[in-house]
Image (cartoon, rainbow, N blue to C red; front, side, top):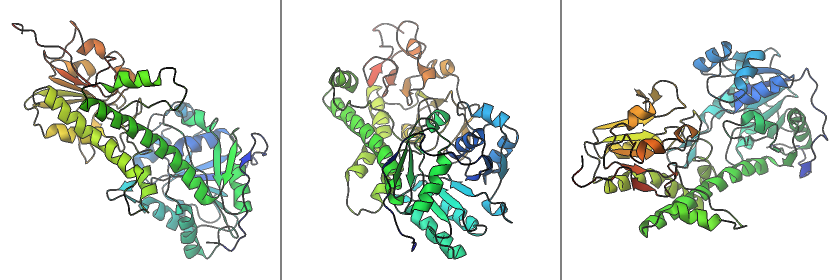
Length: 450
């Protein structure tokens, strides 16, 4: 990719050993989604001059109104006190106005056939090629497959004739935050800095030294793999827990008490809890590792287990409930993760498709983290029910997510004060109701009763 001499990086730079960049440092953050916007606001809070680049007009309008387009604790206040300048495309930053640093945080989803979709990244890179100048530092922060940062460098060289490591700097500095803790974890999680030459490494390291964290220095590919290893490890651990749930069910046991006892005071490798494992940060990353392998591997097997869980829940619930045809079903939770408003790559839409195959009378969706109607996966919206209204008279209930707002749902489905229909069955993969059962009858029919 470059004729610049590759230098072996040190493994660790201790916190505080690097001076921060000068206050007049400018940075463009390309892609103001759930990764890019908190980062841009955090940079601005550190005194850097920040320009945001976002193609979505609704997101730009929200930011112009100093209103967060999604929920992320602490960001609303930062946006009000440090409003951002935002443009629609990086090519608008011409005539020398392009900041010295460009951090790319656009989406890199997985396509249907275990193939990473680089459409957004390719478009941004081509636009960047129109305005790139010598001495600038390009930092890729999106989660990508190995050697994708090299691809960015090759495209820029094709568009400009400039060479990474010689004429401009190129680094990969992954985000490893979780939604809901972005600002906290920017200040606490070690920052990986991947680069293949010392100058690029030093420039990227200086930018991220605004955050008082350890830095871990590696190569471009090393940085890409570290991020994938983190996410895939979590994904596989959830798949193992889900596999245990399936095995326990085959033997007529509930997995929740078994995992609790297996973990009790056991000092090694605690077992995760079962649940729907998906989302933009987990579901796709196995594919980024597996895309270049022709044989079935552990990661594809984990994917198959996690993707099977909606089918399992719908099928077993129908089996316990004596069928779901012409029955009312309440589905609690639509987003992919506890207490987030992010529905991307959630498994609930898949669950709903399986439930619809049973031809129920009505499916009532409850998602307390989304205001108003629920945007459906392939267009249109669905009613977002209030919790008790959805549960009242329901013949079946699925706890599709363990939101904290569902903490008191037990009192509405279990016991004499329950408002679900007599004989209603509940699928509780997360054990929200604390019964220890994956499936249980909330209100058993009483002989001679209603």
